[in-house]
Image (cartoon, rainbow, N blue to C red; front, side, top):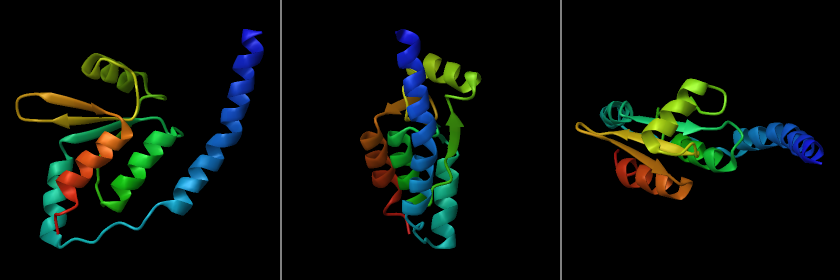
Length: 130
């Protein structure tokens, strides 16, 4: 019975993944425009960030759309397909749950889980930069 359930959900994922990715492409907002100096400031700040994600996770899609809207060049690390990234996420953040935003401070690393918390952080930090 477990095998049947496992293959059922794999089939559902195989059908839904392309639909979700096409939907993301079609509904992603245009990036905000900033001055050259403002965008340089954002680009520099984003070097200290990395998003651990799964490609077809709906919560990860939500965060990626917000990153696009805010025009943030944050490194994306696929914790599903790359075992090195999954292990780093597990060791650093304590759980292999996505989405997770790694925020590198000068003296420590912060691991921020939950898509709504990540979106709030990104908006608070970057939305006002022009």
